[in-house]
Image (cartoon, rainbow, N blue to C red; front, top):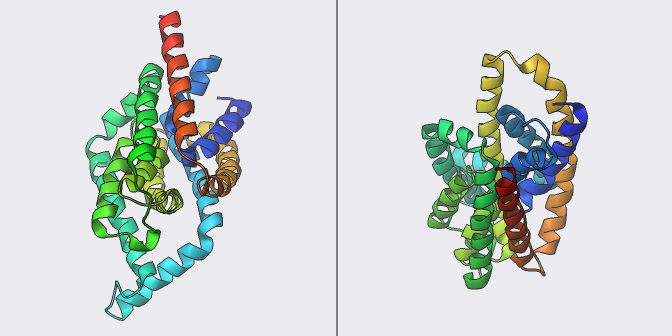
Length: 271
């Protein structure tokens, strides 16, 4: 992979990690559409770490309060004394399903990334999920009303996003909206639980990269993609939270459906 390809894919990763249109599908489909060599699974996962920089920058005040509240709560023997402390533990709970199932089915999920056609087809499911959430979600609950069952349910929705075409943010936002949360609250929780999920996936990918002795050859492309993803990820988080205050999820569903149809047509044409 040359550095121009890495730059473009990094921008795509950052832009689509938090906008609910599936970054994994776009990292598979963009090279396929343009006739580029496929990005390695390791590149795709490690470049996702760039988007974490955007989350850290945007939510750093929230993260400091959450971490401090968790530590103080443990020290005082009252781990759930404040909402911020409870939120920290709810983020942990929501991460457990992805950790367990991701570890059990790691090889299967990696193999799925080799199929652009599958990514295109699954984008239709992502579109349907967003449509169902927008149509039937009550959107009356605030983030402060988040409970343990909500975190577990949203955590299982995050597992679906291990397949290319199912957006992690789309699945978790939709899952939260279907639990009755407004779009902004759903998006904020989605972004917070992305931190341990992406960190964990990146650690596994980094181990694979080191075991394969590919760090020297892939590091320049990963570095360029990482920086591009960090910048575009931050900008898209900021944009999306403002957009969801007044607008629906339908536009993202329509986009996913259009890209899915184009992908299927291209797969048929290419045989």
